Image (cartoon, rainbow, N blue to C red; front, side, top):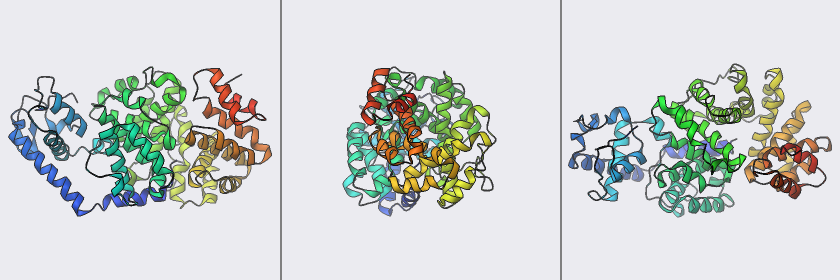
Length: 463
């Protein structure tokens, strides 16, 4: 039947929210098992077993691919069953939409594809209004909006909820990932179209989610060639910022696809077209590696409790930059968010990378304080000689989170006077990516500062 070719913010809330995932109600589990049972009946009645091998269905067909080996993702099954192709007839006129979704759920459940499951999106009937503060419910419900109505509608709801709902605001990055997963399914696997309807909400988690999902069902030997194509479109390359979100999300996707195989993911990053792409891709790889394991249901062996700087101190020189820019996302949960202990760990970094570790600290402090200036500056003061690097990292994070320099400019204006030039330079490094041309970069910096305009422009790459 299936002829197919193959900073986080408020981490405590995120982990608590993911605990809710493990405690889904019996009603929800019953709904899912009923759909799987219905899919098993469709698989049998439609004669899928005459073409495909699927051990759970005791099917031994030889005409189409072996589903146990292929382990297709949900949306791939829906698309292939509906449209046919590669020798398989279309079933859209023979099976109802519900039957097609049910058989897709059954095939995915029967083949137990853990890496695809982490990235796929399975729609259900949950609505935002039903969630009542349940993080896992909001994640699914907003994904449902993207799947049924499109990502623009979902992101608009998401932005509204972030302003008033602590569960959504606290877990916004992973919720945005899920909206991206659902949008990829909504557009039947067209990553470029999904990316074109995205937004930069909550550190651009939506873009990361789309790219993650684009790897579902891709054979390992083809991953590098797919990766090179994913972020090469004109729509994606229209600004440096969107291009960065694409290749950064690609890094996330590589780690999820490979089950946190760090060396494999870094090797694929190294095969991208430009040095900038290669380095930016590693940012997503290391961010994914440092996520708390329960967050994606997959453990990584590329961390050590005895050495919280690892693996930054052992990876190749070309990969160190983004490892150190992300490393405090590893350190902080392990020291129970004791900022002084995190500072001490940063000072244990390789000498050439101590400053970069403190930029990472500033980024995480920004997320943890929700960009509140006084507590953020108080944390950076703990860094002592590296206080300016912490302030710099915080300014960059605020700018990236807002896709604007207005709030970060207010932060820099209240930073110690000796650090303000450097702080505005940090703002410029992010603003420079929002505009394709120099005039746009000049205008962006001109909006946020007059006194430190030269510093902002220098960060934005304007002479």
